Amino acid sequence: MDPDVARWLVSDAARPVLAAAAAEADPASLAAGTRLRALVAPDLAAAALAQVALRRRARAKFGDRAERLFLTPDGLEQATRAEVAVRRARRFAALGARRVVDLGCGIGADALAVLDGGLDVVAVERDEATAVFAAANLGREVVTGDAEERWPELSASDTAVFADPARRTASGRSWRVEDLSPPWPFVASLLDGTRPACVKLGPGVPHAVLPPGADAEWVSDAGTVVECAVWAGPGLAGGARTAVVDGVELPGSGRPPADVGPVAAFVYEPDGAVVRAGLVDELAGLLRAHRVASGIAYLTADAALPTPFATCFRVLDVLPFDEKVLRAWVRERGIGTLEIKKRGLDVDPAALRKRLKPTGRASATLILTPTERGAVALVAERTAS
Image (tube, rainbow, N blue to C red):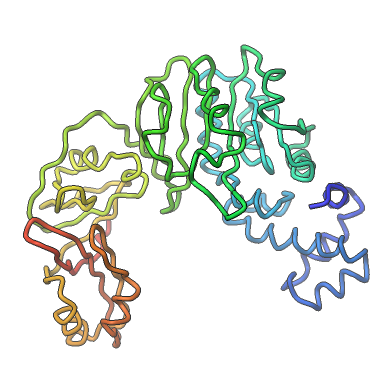
């Protein structure tokens, strides 16, 4: 976005135009554009309508606060969800931080949480227009410039640091650390342990690239794994791996691999954060469960124990993984709504569902998985816990 347009959007002059845009049922419509162009120049009208559309999308991340934020498409996509940012700010405070430098603050989502948590924040953003929006969101000046260049002048001994490097290339979003901006060597240097530091990475980051002395948390929010937060600093364990599911932590303890055994009365599907963190065996121990097959994340047990770290299913039947058998089963039971889950099998659930031709009023869930005795289809239903 043109920085001048950004500066206009955050000015008092834009308020009535933004209010008019917010009154439009469909900001993307031709009629909405025509009405706003009667108030301001076309580029300003388009910017105001785009801002309203972004704010409506942002409610999923920021709730009612979204109506007061200034956003960019990339900034909204990469912004941390409010609950996750609040938890991060609390952890900075618990580590003794009083001031956090946010390198690459984007629209300021994490910096806002730091301020809300009673800490001071210095926000740095390279893109000029995004920095204008971040300053408006934070109610304070934002340092405009390259994070790697500005860090030396900001890195006082009492300063914690947070970095959310950009993960988008010309070909789209990337999870490779080689594609990060600022570059990975600089980002990794922030995790040298001399100060409280957190780096937000994509959840698909390989364990092997993480600095050996850093802790890593795979964070899941409302059923989606949203990030891998890598922490370092005085007082941390160093090398710990944790899954965080809706704010509840499952720390690794080095539990030995779970046994493999037959499918029992209940099957657990671990949350993606548990799988990403490599803590399926840890969860198996807590649930007194075993794996259905080696290397497969489904767990099974004779009893159902409540847990925030997995979805539990009651096993109603075990069918062979054979399309003819499954098609007959779907037809005989009048299954019209069919959920298919799978791990460890080369099958496209959407394509298989189409081939099974579900029609009727009943619904069902099939879990496709390898077992010691071959691939099976488990007829299952979610438990209440």
